[in-house]
Length: 368
Image (cartoon, rainbow, N blue to C red; front, side, top):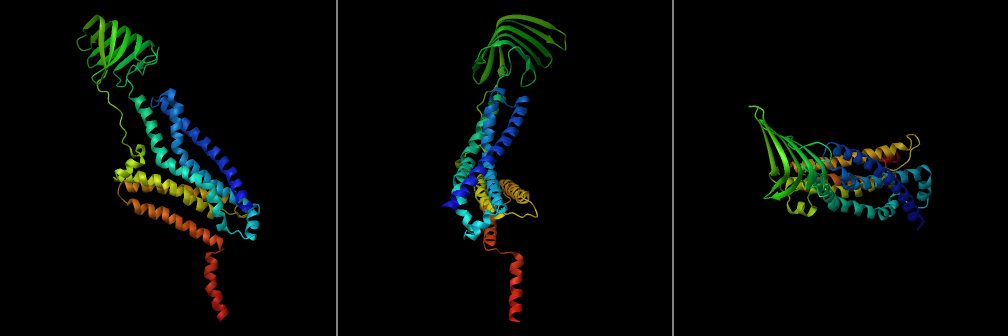
């Protein structure tokens, strides 16, 4: 049908362009933030692109939803401005007739948003957090770049390694300066090897020398050794993930505590919001020469921001048990759905408050 194919073609062009623009903006912001984290040591510099990819995956739900919303509003507003809507209306196509082709175009996007929110969102958060935790909990030798002095995680040691192996377990020309209470020590060795023994990470030094200085007594002792062991990490534990944003949707359902219900309401709300915003876009889109073309686009962005902020607020309220899970979903998303349908019906039948209030007066005058 010409009506359906023309509308879907216009929506496809607008949606593709909007996705490219929003994705570029989000990727730029994520890249700047990731580079900032890498600068302060929160992210491995060699894994910047990987961390950025996981972060962008987490933002895809917002990008796709906003792109779909803006594309519908901009496409229909352009059709109003170019008098195409007048042609379709005069041919018997009301505003409600635009809903089937829009839904046929948007259903894959709505399905993608739902899958991203329920499945990909916790997975990407978990992967990004694992990368950050592994880099944060790396041992002191792994923090050291060859040829550079590096302070340890606790700030009590300074390391220097001339060269290291690809596995970051063996180094040559090792230098360690440590401060333990009143005793300062300087240790140098030709070679160092990292071993794991009983949940302790040990650095085995060979063919070296150690100088001990007691700052209180002033005593200095020099010791040569063939082999010397230094404890780097006294307790090496496996990483654990307990944050709701990194918990799978199935685990949230199986453990319905308040903070899990808040996260579940947020994920389900993204899919519901995408559908409701589709209907709101159909109701909002119009053209008025007196206010300009950007008026309704700005109104649509305001609606989107308010709606998404309410979803975030609802997550906080449910997590603190201020509102119930089902009650919030019904009140917010159900209320927006009813509002959108009433708005579309009013525009479809050309109803207005002024028209409804003037009808009883006209009937009374006719009867008189």
